[in-house]
Length: 630
Image 1 (cartoon, rainbow, N blue to C red):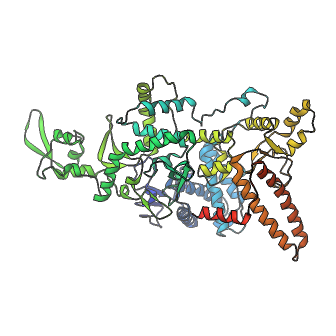
Image 2: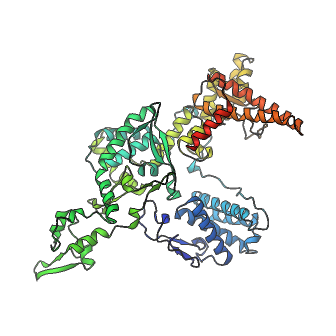
């Protein structure tokens, strides 16, 4: 962390990844190791200050969080220090009671969303204390009242027999159909030379790909690529903006077949629209400063008035009383003062100084470093634009290029989109309050309702765990239950419930399904309908071992790879158990063989229904491992 002084309570970060804040032009951000403002804001002293600093540096180097995330962790730590000060203030004597008091106080001081993030920070602090053996007793702590706020993924309850449960999925987190219609109309009608065309292209890619904003805004320069089977894909750097600058590998994201042509056209057009600022970005790297080629043909001794500056494309008021050049003492009076006042001029040095005032060294730093240590700079990105200078007229610095931040997109949607929609899409009535994450929720929900397994959803959206995917599935639980019941009645599902249904009178089958199917959980190879609100899993989550609550849809091609992987792993596990049966513990091996045999029966039935022939499990796993390594 360049610029940080360990002994200081406030660190001034002068360089590196922490200086990059989304949508903010902060050159030297601060990281204060102090109590939260609601606790007085005094510096953390003694071992608590040392602990907060050490863990902050550790977290930064392990996970590359941005400075906002680090501040949240320090604030959470300060609440634990405050709670500990009411008794024994030493770090080593912390127990669960201290952590509970800290989290309870956080709930009183903050809204649900802010408290949720701070509670996660306290949980992480407890994990660090356990991992590094800094406390006398094992904490193994998780705040009992930790809940994801309703506005980040909660859903209400609906009666299964109500019409509301059968309606099309709608949510404020999702983009309405009229929003897609508006973007499509703007994509069709807004001319290429329009200054807002670049934002229309970004909205188009967001709507078609469902990626995070940072993945689209910082996408490498490219055209649509195709694999050996002809499927179109793009390359992105999968990362969250909140994580900061991460050395992360590029990933292939395959496009939905209906959107391939639109994505291909948008990528080609973005190359053209952003070509001028991309050329400036390349010159900035070459000159290690702003692109001043527009001054090459100017005489070095020339004196510039306001009109001359305007002719060069610079703001025409730089030499006025409040102009930047005048206020910076880079202007000189010319001639005698008259009734209109004194005339002022500046030289080439003043013009160059103005062009350099908004330039920062981080404009020249790499934006991405991929898995092959290749560096991607601003001129290697698909989207970039000239730096905005402010003002009503939208003046831009054509000598400086910058990536498009989320804040830039937000302000454009707020200020310019309504006028553009009125001019170029007057017949489309849509809510102009568009947020980039709405498309991610929309596409994730559509894929979920279309039957794509959670593991494939997680992989396609470049998430780490399926738990994160659930927050983007806006389909109500009630609607999922009704769809599963309909699939069973239509004969599209297999499982114990379906087999039992054949022996039940036709007039009682609806009642049987209502009693048996009250919940739906995706388990990778199929679905589970056990209601966990009534009782825990009787088979300890071993769904494939002849579980009565396990179902799978026939011909579900999206789950084939997961089924094949499970079968190969189980087959090898059974072979290992058979070899161990001749050893010292034959009884345990026999039990394990019987358990794996049950799982294999279920998996082999699913493979047969999907038309998959028997294969060598060892060769399959070796092929999968080699593919992941590549």
